[in-house]
Amino acid sequence: MPLSPDLQTKIDDLVQKNRVVLFMKGNKHFPQCGFSSRVVNMLKEVGVPFETVNVLADPAIRDGIKEYSSWPTIPQLYVDNTFVGGCDIVTDMYQSGELQTLLGAKAPEPVAPPSITVTEAAAKALKEADDGSGDVLHLEIASDFKYGLFFGPKGESDVVAVSHGMAIHFDAASAKRAGGLVVDFVASADGGAFKIDNPNEPAKVKPLSATELKKALDAGEALTLVDVRGDDERRLAKIVAAKTLLENEAEIRALPKDAKIVFQCHHGMRSRAAAERFLAEGFTNVWNLEGGIDAWSVVADPSVARY
Figure 1 (cartoon, one colour):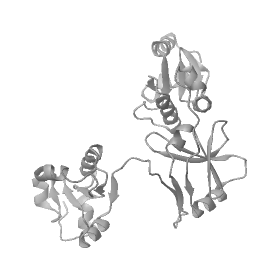
Figure 2 (cartoon, rainbow, N blue to C red):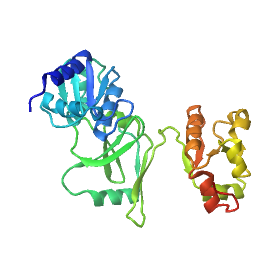
Figure 3 (cartoon, rainbow, N blue to C red):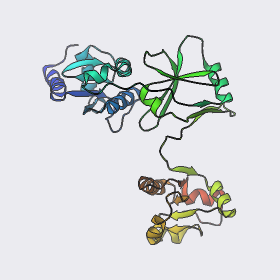
Figure 4 (cartoon, helix red, strand yellow):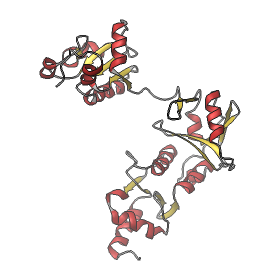
């Protein structure tokens, strides 16, 4: 169906007023699909300014851009008022350096294969997952260290690392983030899952169960338990070992950056937000009590009232 004149004009304006514009699901700060996220990460790696249009916010744009480009999928990249392609095409161009040339950025320098370890258990599981189609194993590591492990066609510019008889293909940006990475497989009753341990990954807030916290406290482990709730809630229920954030913030912030700090609230949401703030300030051993004091009351100390 042809575009209406108004919609044609609207899309023309979006394409023409921005040298580099990506029609995607979500936006450059919060992609809402894996393909959109992949293209955003590549554009960020190239390092040129770009704008995004969230097709989920406007059904007319979502359908209309497909008609506009005669391309059936999202995301879609436009450069200098010209349609470039979708995720697969942009990926191929990025890996070959063609995208950098198109955008006027410096061509990527060759990247050496990273030193990685694939454990015996992971190698066995990966070999069993290979369907014999000839596809190769890829590992993508996004700028926010989200991982994609999958079989797919070999790319001309793949960086290949081998461990335990398994060849893993990386794009250049992922290879730079993979040095020292370990791929393991943890078996479980429902089949198991792959586990990736990457020393390049920035510190994250780590979850701690009420059972684990009780065990640590009973063993006298060196940690600081921080209650982010106010006095009204603490009068209803509290963990005796916890310090309040409001009364002890200066003391807590003066702790060594690698000190173990466990944050706690009612159900675990406010404490996670507080933990994220401390993480952003350089603390590296930050934990959140999952389920908060409510979980503590259920599984660790029933004498603590629930509310």
